[in-house]
Image (cartoon, rainbow, N blue to C red; front, side, top):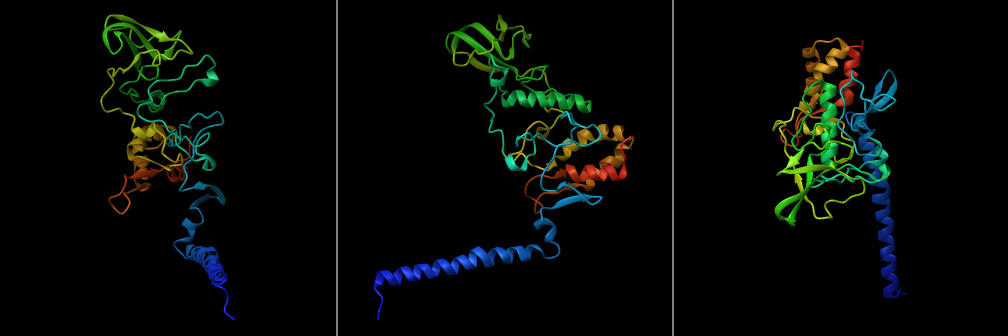
Length: 293
């Protein structure tokens, strides 16, 4: 007896679902698991975990902070780049800040909990701190000496044109002293909490200042990666930290540089991306070769 067409079609679809469930839901995943356990692949398949003295201290694929209980950087270690993943390098909360190059004006609210820093101010503050920590010039263009974005809201008589009538340093709240005293002959005011000077008609005007065109502090020292979990820093950021780490460990800077070079990975396939230094692996090697004083 021949089954009706619609029943035959449903049975065929059911058989296809069962076959592909077995193939793609069982056979394929199990085959990949087995493949990942082959010699040479099993370490990466198991998370590239790093152990020291029998204890797992992290993964070569996920960055981590090297700070004390109060969140201050530990001077004897190389420091990772900033992270926007949770409270920093949280693998369960991988993310970026979602702030772009136009984020230059801070939100200064009457309630400090509602205030937030622009990307520019975050970069300025980090650059200043990294510079002080490593004994180099942390100044950057468009940053004030106190580590916020050097941005003015300029009000003109005819909106976008005409004489300047009022100028506010939007990222420096009262009672702070504005980074410049006047702009086109008009005295600069500090910002008042809760005021939106851009909505009020102020023209956002970043001021470059006299910082060097090529900052001593590299970009990856002041910006987070897209995932917030990047385990590597640039060779330039590693070089910036060599003298501090060598001093703290009583080591020859040349020997520390040699370790940095040994833990520097080249470009993928020789041409993709940029060289990077794995911070965790480098710090473990430091502890083995140069015990902290």
